[in-house]
Amino acid sequence: MSLPLEIWCCGCGRLIPTKQFDMNYNEHHKQKRHFYCKSCAKEISQNIMKKYCYKNNKENRVGYELAIREICTVFDMPYIHKAMSAVRDFELSSTKAKDWNYVYQYGCALKDLDYMDSKYWNNLSGNTLLSIDLFNENNPNDARPNSNGDEELLMGLQEDWGIQDSIDDYLRLETLFNKYSQSENLTISMENTMRYLCLAELEVMKKKGDKENNDSKAEEKKVMDYYKILGLDNFKLKENKTYMEKNIENDFFIMEEMEPLEWEDKNLNNRLGIDEDYEDIMRATLNKVANSKDYPDLSLEDVKKRNKK
Image 1: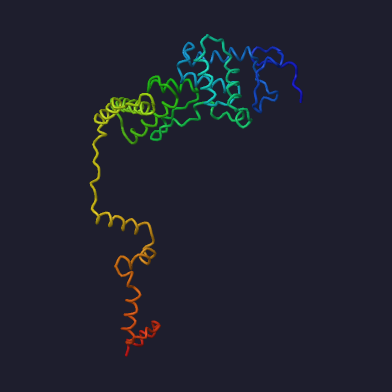
Image 2 (image 1 turned 135 degrees about the vertical axis):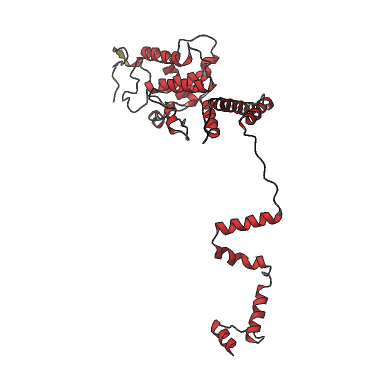
């Protein structure tokens, strides 16, 4: 199927030469081109970038990520984290201000990273944060995602945690907070203190992951201070158990986990200390019953008859 020489742009409504449309490999784009011409794509993507990055501040990594996610949604492209990072790193390293068409730049990043297969382009499930687990398991009504999209979601996260470096940081903070607040009725002061604890723990994680400066003693002290404030340091380690206590616990575990007869059949002899002499003991028992040293093969009926005499 040959491509038409011109395509109608959904943005400006003009009939424009096909070469003025960037490539798109989503199955809904039969002509393998975006629905918007390069000029409209550039304007739309820049407006989205400004909305999330606060007056085009590219240092705001979270805003940058959300902007690229929305651009991907509008233009039916798959959000790939590596591609977003590549576009951002390239723009930050640029020495001159550029009037970027982010749709084109992101498409180039996908191509450079070999994400051109239709299995990527047809899967748009990761284009919004609504696909990320930000739910409070203890309070399902306090679910983060909402119908107003990622922008309001980000505003809520920033209200709780301030401006963080990445979406991953927000996910870590939410996970920590949900863990500590499980089944707790928190006052406002307790909730705020618990958030400070989560932020301090995040700083410890970052310091330990920093190869150049992984000294986290100061951050760890903050964590311990918040533990004391919240009463989370009131714990005791179990005392060392005696050898006999460990054996008893082990026996109880075995009896709870295995069929009693199965376990006893395999272990009773050894527990009585007669395993090595078991056969000799049985021979002696038969000798006593039969009153003979010929080691007869007696049946139960033979023993009963013998006992009646």
